[in-house]
Structure formats: structure tokens, C-alpha cells
Image 1 (cartoon, rainbow over the protein chains, first blue to last red):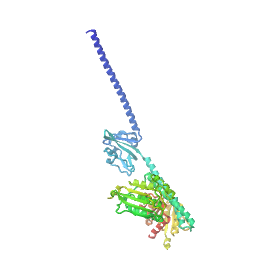
Image 2 (cartoon, chains in turn brown, red; image 1 turned 90 degrees about the vertical axis):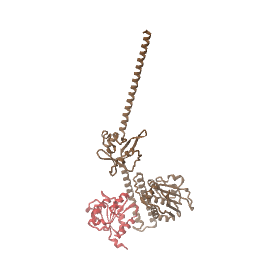
Image 3 (tube, rainbow over the protein chains, first blue to last red; image 1 turned 180 degrees about the horizontal axis):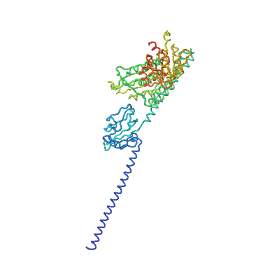
Length: 414
Length: 154
């Protein structure tokens, strides 16, 4: 071998060794990076877990078979089960759910199972339920259940829930307060009512004309207060959601006629003519008659109040929409509702300027209550008032109110 | 008129508000009805017996009222408020009355209260009261006339 060739060979070997060394270094770098990345991922995982564990609401994750794969600390605290005790077990077995009366919700009706099956479940907030702890005590709970979807497939379900004992207590206190307040308000009103009545009927001596006049004003003022307290009580109950709807098959034409009879004295006093077209063959409809009565009373009394003497009121009941809906309309020849105030007419305590100028009485709550009742019954209430340019002596178009009771109510009775 | 038959009628009125008690008693007496009044179910019997000028007896408790009914009078009807002085309310009175009073339990009870809670009304009706009036929504003379006609048909 010549020195030249030996040198070349040595150079090649050096180069080769350098290559290997470089590769090794590169590999070590990659491994280092991977190690650092791994550490970062592990660290992030630890942080994520700490976050989940610390969530104030109870958290439980189940797999496709409904078996618990994760619970957080709040779950452990609220239910008394440690994570170890429940992992791998079926959630519906570990945490029974029951209603107010103590009846256990069966497995296949549990929201978790329904969501697993792909159902979209919307929580019924009016139906409180309770979770049972490890020690068999229970607490009222509110929960949100959602499916976990990965690559378009449901791989499990996650539920968050909280203990709403405090909220329920507050609600109960509010309801009792409203009840108590209305009773307390009504007592002095009754006292004024009855003593004034006795004075007016001459039970405690004869009155002169002026005394009678004054006492009548006192009585009327008091009656307005009574109406206001009743209205406030209704509004409170509605706002709190404690208004109970008790639907039953109701004869609506009969109901309307009865309200008409009730208000006849006032109608006659104002010389108003009523044209009732209460329909024939209207089937019984599933509504709460007490509440519907309030609506009809309000609409009729408004029509009477806001129509001047000798005016006209038309009432009709018809089946619409291929006989599946009931439409109640009431039209008057009264003052109408000013266009620029029409959007406020269903607001609490609102009364339009034109009727306030006319010095009529009203709480401004009647339509708010009526709308709340109809909305909650699944119906619709609206009105038309083309013009409020009331002209004395002419027949005016006044206002028409419409109430449509939902079609499905009729179908139930077919 | 029918005054003579009304003279013998006695009504027990249970009401916690003094002022209302006053006007109710006045109206009933104007109709010729004898009135016993009481504000609560609780207090002891003997120490609170007072005779008023007209010969009516005023009491201050429902326990007293119950004893009163047992011991003495022919009470033809009971006017009952729901809220009363003391721990027990109108519901307690009706329950006890219907349970303990033997043939008295046929005496008609008219509940006159300002509480309009539908569940409460249902409970009273279930216990067997004749009628439930909301004070603030009824004229005094209407309630009195109603009670009258039930008594005349008794």
C-alpha cells in the first residue's frame, strides 16, 4: 500500500466515524427532544387532571357501557364514594336517582343511558330529582349530561351536577313570602271593605248624600287596591314559576258565556251592545279553566272599560286550521291602542297614554298576566288596533284581541 | 218576618283580627244571630271567660272554643278564619272538631280567610267544611246571607 492510498483509507474511516458520531448526536438530540416533549405532555396531563379534579361541580365520565371511567373530587365529596370504589362500575347502579316522592328512576330511563343511545335529552326543570349518597341520604340535584363524540362516534358520556339544596330553600322562602305578604296586605283591605259596607248599607245610621258619595269613593279606592294585590300575587307566582297549571277538559263557550254574564251589569250601565258568536260543536278543550277564565275576564273587562258608552263589542269562538285550533276573538269600537305604544302593551304595569288621559282605572298588569297564562298553555295572544284616533260620535275600529289555543289540545280529545 | 226563627241561632266566630271580629259580630247581631267569638285555639278555658254586655261570651283561644262547644252551647254554625292567634290554625281546629265533636261534627263550618292558596282550599273541602270564602273578594253581607240560608235549610 502506498502512503497515499493509506491516507485516503484513513480519511474515509474518519469521515465514516464522524458520520456515525453525528448520527448518534442527532439521535440523542431527537431522544432528548422527545423526552422533553414527553415531560411537557405529562406535565400538561397532570395540570388537566388537577383542573378536572378541582372543578366545583361533580363530574363523572362513563364509557359506552355506562361504566365509570373517571370521577372528580367534588363527586367524591358530594356522594361519599371514593374514586377507587366506583371506577369500572355502572353509574346507574352506584348512584341511584329518585324523584320528589322517592320513586327510583329505572335504569333505561336514566338520562345517561338515553344519551348513550344517541337521544338528545332536554332537562325538565320543573321535575326535581335527587341523587342518593353512599350513606343512603339524598340531596336535590341539577345536572347536565352530554355525549362524548370522537370521530363521529359516541364513546361515552360526561355528566356535571350540583347540589341545589340551597336554591330550593330560597325558592321555597320566596313562595312563602309572597303568600304571606298577600295575606297581610289583604287583611287591612278587608277591614276597610267591611266597615265601609256596613256604613253604606245604613247599618250604623243613615247617611246624607255627600257622606254616601265620599264613602263610595273610599270603597272604590279600596276595591282597586284589592285588584292590585291580586294582580301582584299572580305576577309574583308567575315570575317564581310557582303558578300551577291544572288542565282539564273545559267547555270554552260555557266559560265565555259565564264571564259575559258576570260583567253584564257594567255592560248595561255603559249601554254597550255585545254580539257573541260562541260557536257550535266546539269540543271540550284541555285547559286550566281558572286561568283561562282570568284571561277572558281581563280581555272582556278591557273591551268594556276602553269603549265609550253605546259602543259595540263582538266576541267569537271558531275552530281554525282544519278544525285543529280554537280561536277566540274580541273586537270593540273603543279608543284603540296608539301605534307607537303597541309594542309595550304586554309589559308589566304599562298603560297607554290615551287610556290614562281618559281617566280609566287599571293596574297595567292584566295583559302581562294574560299573556303569561296563554304562553304557558302553549297558545298565542295578539291584537290589532289599526287606529287610535278616537273620534267622538263616530264608529271607531277600536281594538281586536286574538287568543289561539294550541292545536294539540284539541287533538287529545278527538 | 223570619226574625223569630233566627233568634235562637248561634254562630261561633274564630278570627284573629280584633277589628274584623268587631264588624263580623256587629253584622251577625244585626241579623238577630247570637255570636260567640274566639281568637285562638290555645289559651286555657276558665281564666278567659268574660261575659259581654249583650250576653255573648268572648273567648281568647281555640282550645277554649272547643271546650265551649262541648260544654255549653248549641252552636248552629262556625265561622272560621285560617290564621289564628297561637300555634294552631283553622285546619287544626277543623281536624280536631271533626274528630272529637261527636254529633257536633254535623255543624256547618264556613271558612273565611284571606289566604287563597288552592291546595289549602282543597284540604279544607276534603275535611268537610261547607264553603271557603276569600275575605277580600266577598262582601260581608253576602257571606252572612249565605250562612243564613244554610241555617234556615238546616
